[in-house]
Image (tube, rainbow, N blue to C red; front, side, top):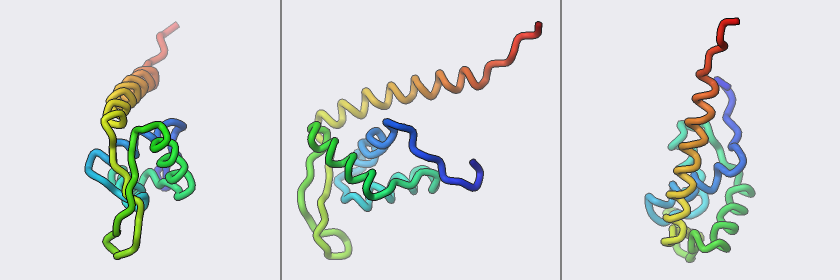
Length: 114
């Protein structure tokens, strides 16, 4: 995938959004920009996908939203983590680390000589 952007694996977006919000309250565009910058552009989040995730996480109580002014002076909804969101991030981070380590272990396996 050298010249292609990677696609987000199912379930990845929530943990990335929660991690982005550990840096402080952000509006949706800033969250998407943070993810792109943190991954050196390898992961790009589409608006529709991002806002669906934000609304889902808000409904679950992981984040809260309030209206404010963006740097451009336009009204924007700013999202921030709740205590439940921080707890969820710890759980999701542990699961992703275990998953990545397991896949890496399998990919590093060498066939045994017959």
